Length: 183
Image (cartoon, rainbow, N blue to C red; front, side, top):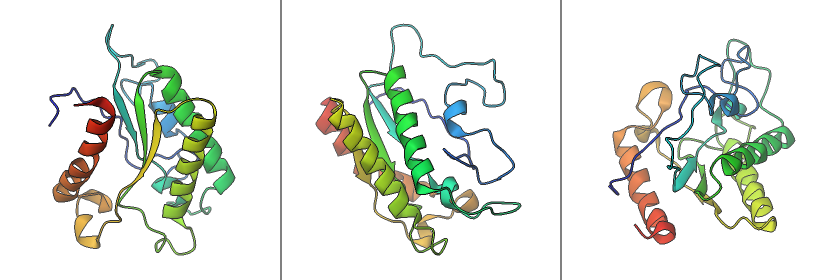
């Protein structure tokens, strides 16, 4: 859409404080700096003279979902908020000039898993992070809550967003990018 280069750091099932597969303790913030997720020696760095103009962070579902093979409960909110703030601080230190959007995924809900307040916890941690960054003088970190998806939107592997929902997310986020970056 913008003719921009895209680098995506994705690893299904990873969280900030715990993963979907609870015995796995390798969390997303550790993987964020790797070029190859399963190789600790393969660190990622942007090519010389380049850095992202925008970073989109959409995390948290795995911290609050029902874990496998045994569920030990959701992350504590305090631990999750602290981990969220630390991860955004890491992103900011790596990319000091980037605009950072803390997104609430359309795929998360307070309705399921029952009693875990997944959407609210992620929104509140993101909002607390944005407020803390702003109080510290960082005005380039934003919160955006994408509209909650319908079941028919989550038909990709393991209830992830399908192509149509990805397109709607892009259409929703594009004006935000334009407003901040002038693209």
